[in-house]
Length: 160
Image: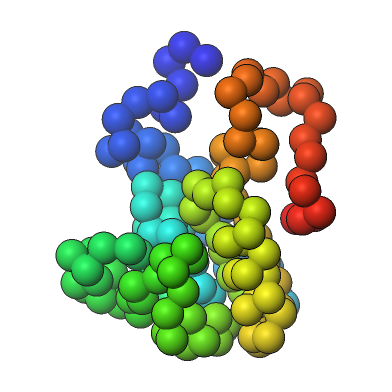
């Protein structure tokens, strides 16, 4: 897609994501109020997760966000986001606190089915009521081939 903002720099992708999120903020606020969501955990606070977290904060929700970098904790805290160091490949004891939320947004690029299966077991033992899986690559098998939007996708038993 020539000229697509998703092919630009990380900064331009973040701005584009922020614009899209801004367009739906009022709709999302009304919807979240209607279903009673109070706390939202976002697994992955990168170029999409961080602007999403900021929009939920502006809408008045409590937001938890994960990062794998110690340096990013202060950035998240400064935005009134409760930060967590969390790597799904090496879950720590703080996963229980991170999963104390009404909704979980999984926003990480991982193709490790075993790791996701372990995460799902932890989610099943939590109070998470709704899950949104956001990924542009993780839905495809980890094979050296080109996938098209109309390609059939195998989920290896995980139906998201």
